[in-house]
Figure 1 (tube, rainbow, N blue to C red):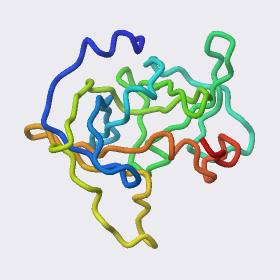
Figure 2 (figure 1 turned 30 degrees about the vertical axis):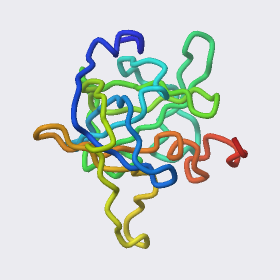
Figure 3 (figure 1 turned 45 degrees about the horizontal axis):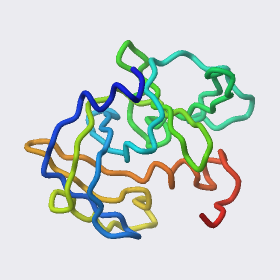
Figure 4 (figure 1 turned 180 degrees about the vertical axis):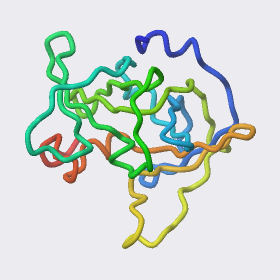
Length: 176
């Protein structure tokens, strides 16, 4: 599914997110599943959505970096978010997809269990991320919690996560 087809899935909801550095942020979020949890990322970071195909493994890479694929002449590192975020299982099946992201002018793929839809969230629907003991839980990439009807979304800063030093995918953050 190309990113240009994603807006056809659009829904409207009363979801609210809080960006830790910029306050509540309304906008459109691509929602996806990791295990039983549902996450949302800024749709503007999404380049396209592709079915999963096994990447070429890179020697000595961390487990969550599955390897690389050649995407129309561009070598794209593939990160399994299920492994990175410590999901209990990471099965590869017909629903498994790769969200191709454009992060700091670099193309990166993120493996997720499935993509749900695109939701438009307003400020009132997004609550601040919970404050947790930083020593035991890293919530630095969670920008807020959104809720639409019975659904709860964990909104994440995918650019911050993918460009973090721990990921090793990009050079140290350069002032934007």
